[in-house]
Length: 252
Image 1 (tube, helix red, strand yellow):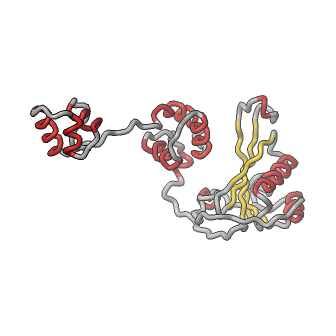
Image 2 (cartoon, one colour):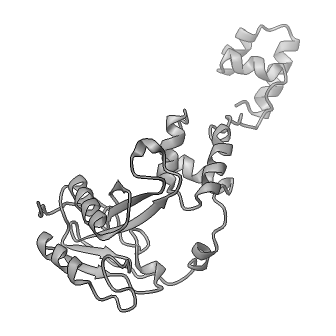
Image 3 (cartoon, helix red, strand yellow):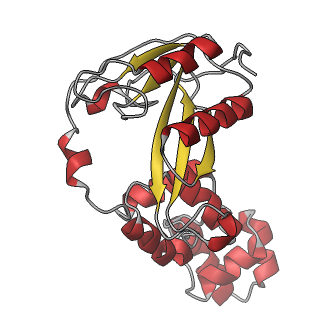
């Protein structure tokens, strides 16, 4: 970038018959830079704005988030990277906010500003598992028209793994839970769940006898999220610090 003084000198020297190479050597600048200023392609005192690499992928991101407003940014980042996006993840998330790509969600917005519970959990202490329904699943997935994704996330590090299932009933929950823990390298000391009927009685939060037997088999304690406490559940929703997690291997 040339200053206004350098721009004036460059134009004056050019009018005096100096070549672009001579002007560039005199000012200590690149010849392409000098030529651009002399031709009026660049303005002194202003940096040239590089094209926003996110813009070509903006329509795709808008459509994906319109279809699923709660789609994880990391998942969307993986998708656009596969399509050719070359920016970093932090640049990508800033672009999502700058262009206001994610549509408004009233239930999520209602929790903004509420007090959060800061829970410091050591490595290997807790994993939270929750179901995510994926409608119109591709036939190649082999899980039926409506796929169900069990996501297990480590509360200490935020590391997560997921398993597809054709149902959220008790047998499929246990099978998916076992696979998720195997992907994570073992179980943590405690498990956290929403008030899903396959784990507890939703009205009271008391664990069912069937799931109690499962927890005993793996040697893990179970915590049930309080009702209507959106800021008390979820990795990151609890506000705990992130870091590396280690697991204690149990179970078959």
